[in-house]
Length: 220
Image 1: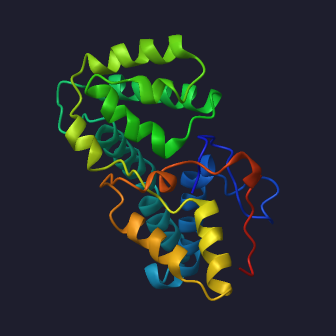
Image 2: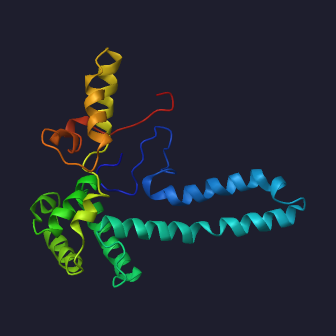
Image 3: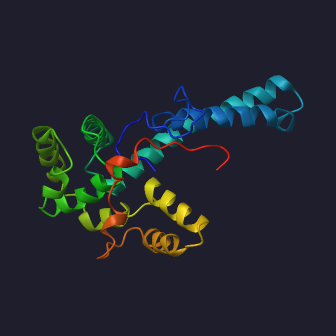
């Protein structure tokens, strides 16, 4: 799971060019669908040209469907779902600026969206504690809060707990030594990811600085 928000985030040890980086996922999904369509051409039509035309027509639906899904997701995460008074242009502007200062400040992705709900309720300090450019963040919060976001709805879609990479590694290391307790505790936290509970603060925190760069390997 990505911690500091960065579209260039990539974990695979063999992906040296960032082909499958976080920000590349939509394009790669469409590329994968195109390869699937090529394999299915003989089943789409006996005439190859018509089969290709059918595949191209179908693949053309991906971009608008993805954009619609992305827009709906951002609306929900910002507490603006179902708000017809907030048009897509306003939403896109808010999202673009939010992601920009998240990226420039390397703000923790999961914590940021969760803290936004507290900011909607009037307590912006947990969020402000994550960022460097307070002027930009405060200006953004003024724009966003003017739209009266639904904080309770945000808490239902923005998790407190995700299986953070260092916690997964900790659970794996312990399990290989015969200790399943760390795995059980991690599962208990992420099975109810939206319910904040006392005593689980470590499961909501980013990896410690000494965890270093994270890499995954095909054989794991």
